[in-house]
Image 1 (cartoon, rainbow, N blue to C red):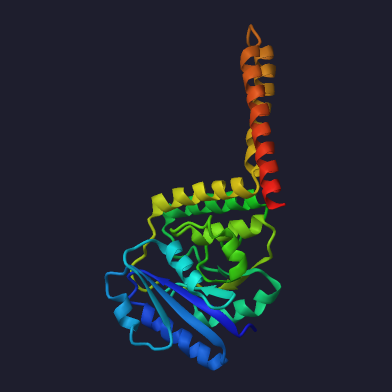
Image 2 (image 1 turned 90 degrees about the horizontal axis):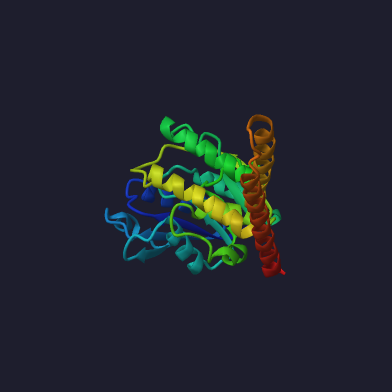
Length: 288
């Protein structure tokens, strides 16, 4: 197992769980005898989160003067990390610290190891589950891979690879979704291992409607950046099929063939396909 790692804990108003998480990390580090640095990034907490742990001597505590977002806190931690091996986890007690050695044991042969929550949907309200299902199916289609857990907050990864995508990684909760999609669409080795997921301590910061819409926008934008034909080809095929359908149906069931509509739909399909191919060429050229 990797002995040197930077453990990054982004936190915002998590006084209920932060002390327990840090103490669990320190205990695990002592038992494993590893050189782990623990970096806690307080993202502008107003509930006294930092005061809960400020007297602990062997951690790195970084403050944001105001709340910048989950992803921004992680990026701050990454910039301050001494080691190339990174682990991120949450401060709310939802992830078991005991799973970290399992992730690190697999990291040498993979660029990222993700803790896939076996019971992640248990605590999700029923009204949010359809959106979650659509989001996962969209990500699976666009990446061509069945993703067990798109946005798990417990993962181990390599700093030098993450830094390649740092300019794309958002400051909000979609950080984990973006890094997952970025690495999968760039053919990096990503491994998922099953983990347990516990009830959080404290109040959730997720905004269901806004964050779901942001996630969908993010997935499409990320795949457009790395594999644009995944988006443009289906849209182009839809216009081609529509032009044929209009031509055939209007010939069979209307007094006059809808030739102008057919031509417009067909040309639209050609234009969308051309834009997709140009975007794909630009993407491939930028990587060479």
